[in-house]
Image (cartoon, rainbow, N blue to C red; front, side, top):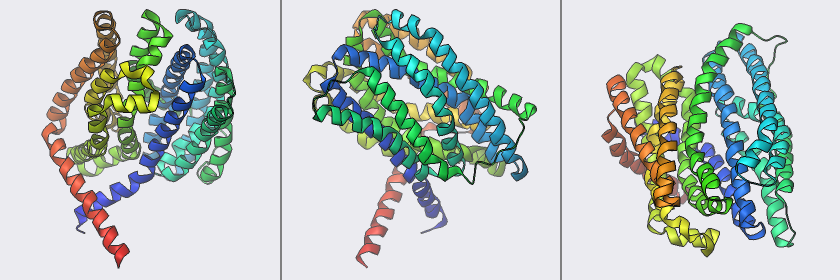
Length: 449
């Protein structure tokens, strides 16, 4: 295989466990929902969706403030400074996590009242403690990411999520009544066990010093405030529909809308997997190859995301009713038209995500933050008015229009700054399919011999 082919092969190799990890996360999520909808009342499913949407935002807050600045700083740091970066980032992680927990405790009852969701406050109180346990678990994961150790991340996530999934399935099999509080506690236990399992993988990497570098702490904080804002805006866009539906209609309506979002998350699997192992490499590409390097990594990463996602998007779009009924039951068939719209705008998401990756990886997160805040605000306004005009599907229309607006702005910037042409991304999809075929064919020939 030529050098170019070898480069593509390395991408497949590096991304394999990252992709498997994302599939595992999504798979456990589907298992949980498939069995929960059969043992938990529909209104309580809606409460759980609201709970997970809020906690997902909290985890995105943490990732924005901690993960992106930590990884970007650590991969470019000299060897003598790595221990200081790890220690200082861990200190910032503790400050951010405990602040989030305090904020959640304060807002738990007001949020439950706002959504008229009895019992939601108890789930938030449990998560306030869970959030602290996540400090070592996630910091271990961030360390593993800098070394592209996605196998270790996969193992830890399987342990963490598998405990909750097994509990839900056992309750279904033995016909045990299960409460949302029980599920939140089991979820927290899974994180604690996953942390213990993850420690041996990072023991050699977790080199700490006995002081916190205040200058570095300030640098990480100011970098993180923008990536934090970016992640919050992104997650806000993804949760706006559920929040509006829960407020304007009911938690049962949230449950009816959620299957489309759950299935659409399938398309995020390759996007997130590839973004995870590409992100640490952006700064190095710019340093070594300039704008041409950034252009190369953007085109390759987005085209690979689409090459992996399209075989999932097309069947789900064409047979939306079939998949909704098989997985969630006929009671949720009204989500099928919504699924088609989410499938359509899922083609746009890789472009927008990698635009943000390029800016964050180059240490310029401010522009990405500003664009996402603007888009999130537009999404709120559009979703609110379209929800009143078209019902549940109006929220999907609002998201579609918002993503299209962001895509247009991003592509204009990428073309003017880096000379990136969107058509090259689509042309490159065929290169990935040809490379994948050649690799698979070579493996078959090797096996036969």
